[in-house]
Image (cartoon, rainbow, N blue to C red; front, side, top):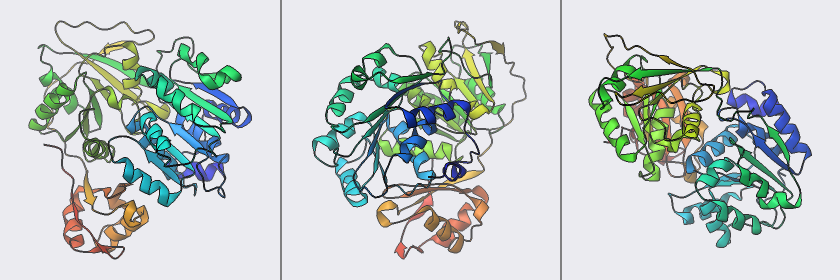
Length: 444
């Protein structure tokens, strides 16, 4: 596979020194541990050499990538799909019927499988895919796996992979359990450590601010702060699910277009929230720490900590959503009258003064449309573009992010032409199939 051809669809022209070294280490060694801060491009570091080791001719699964959360599994899957490798890939995780995933795997015969530990074990136990040809295993975000108590599931999976010839373990912290990981007991791994002496350090591209709230209830201060961003996307982190709902309801009442994200939502609701935000149809995402890993949005500049992080590591991972790939980012801590500034090593906070007047919240330039056909109906991204341009009268630059799901598709279009597109596409056919098309709204 040509490296530049794989990177071009991602908008990347070259790899960082860390990525170059990691790719070479994984190519040449059986077991590799990659330790690097969040936001440094670890996903590409293991995907590129992994893809070189997958045979197009072999129709059985050859590589397995384990992710601690559904969102991270989906993120890795999306990156892999964008690279246009020609390989067949499946992504499996909780929150949707396992039987549907089984049918999809039986139909597509994946050569690479990405999934969460529980769902992977379920499919292995039911014999839904063969493990006899899986030779490469990647465990992404190993420290998060430990935090979520997945050790037993990981060990069970490894015991059922008889032909593993190499393992890549990726982590943002140097967890002591890495040394006792079963495959490494027989052969020590090569370790690439890019964490530095202090694993809590963040890129210099992120600036850190604190904002004083005169009231214990910080909602008004949050609203004023978000207004200073002039509609640029921002993630607002809170510590509890109930707080997501409360903060989100307040911001919507203030006129912000925001999406809500937490573990109590159904998977389809979580998918919709992330797509609204990442497709630029919502410019504020209110979230628990669930999105502190797995959300990769190159244009995200602002991270707001409405609640102070419970742990120092949480601050690291929250802030890691911005300042990625050497882009600039800003992190804001909102401090109530009884709260003090945390003492984080190598983080210098500057006070951010809120100065009125504050502009009204801006509406996003994009909206998200739902199309009631997906992969199951043999729909591709190209089919969606053709449908919207031919039937809907859209121009190519009126169409943004496209996410083709199993049964439906999300697509971002510019707000000014969204009504025209929906009117002209109503009752029209995509790939000779009638479908429903409608705007995806924020969850009430």
